[in-house]
Amino acid sequence: MPTYSSFFSIPSGPAYFDSAASSLTCKSSLEAMATYYGETRANVHRGAHRFTRQASEQYEAVYGKLAKFFNASDQEFAAVRNSTEAINAVALGLDWKTGDEVIFTDVEHHSNLLPWLRLQKKGVKIKILKSDPQGRLQADDLSALLSQKTKLVSFTACSNVLGATVPVVDLAKAAQDSGALVCVDAAQYVGHHAVDLKKWPVDFLAFSGHKCFGPTGIGALFHRSDSGLEPWFVGGGTVRDVTSSDYHLLEHRERFEAGTPAIAEWIGLGAALDVISKVGHEVIGTHDRHLSEKLLSVLRETDGVQVFGPQTVAEKSCALSSFAVKGVPHHQAAVMLDELGFAVRSGHHCAIPLTRKLGVDGTVRASLHVYNDEKQVEAFGEALQKLALLG
Image (tube, rainbow, N blue to C red; front, top):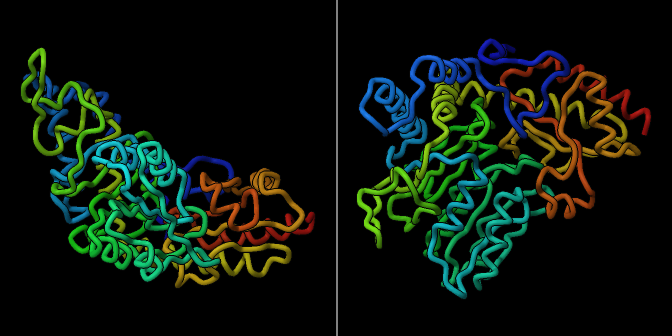
């Protein structure tokens, strides 16, 4: 099957099987950032000279790309550093009262866990939606947890450990029917699947550029205009008037972006979204499913390998699998696989409660994307066979 490696800057050395941590960066993203620094290097929305005008036009164009990519209003996106900052922005930007409830799941990354746990210091009550042994979540289980005090429900669109399919729309509808706001961590999802925010009944959505072919240190927060979100910090670029005793914020997205933004990275993110659109979500999905099936087959056929989470591609939303090799600690397995030609992730994957639920202190995770191919997965199977012999 074809790959799209020509779109990417691929490092020499081991085959890259760690896209769930950070995807490879597309060449057009690097080129867009270099063009900004080399030709239009200036601050945005400040001044009237040609360089700042050009930089501002490039910067503003990304909002239009986001609007088209997600089928939403360009005024409902704010630039952030990553999904972590986006979710913290929601936690910090809503008006919490003692007795309010937040529900999150037991498969969450720490970024969609710690911000809510911290709210307990403000008197907010925490509830946890539990998954089944394969990491699957059910809307009926969520409905049983919801109450009139539930202010927000937050969940991942795809577990970074198990890759299990999450019924996003069903969970969101259950939450909103009870009057709760909905926040979705789409960090693992956006680079692999289309998201239509006219069809997803969510109030907030977070994603990171570095997981969808873009640069590090940049991401976006979608926030519905009627969500009640307030800026989590204020400063230059957010106000229309200031006195020595008060200030008045700008409307819409400008009020959320204080200070000089990550201009080059934001422009690079826009270029990455263009690449995803050019390749197409249908093509990416087909590629993901094919490689996921191959990877699961390789893992199942290797003696001494335990696979965590869904055992079939039909139950997965991401091309990733977490596993353990009998008798080989996860970090040691990752080092040995690196020596055998494969870069994989090991550890708790910033999801300690989930790995504890799995009964382990960490796993090995292989995660793939459109720049990987079937031959690499076959070779990975051969490497696993060698590793398993040591267990």
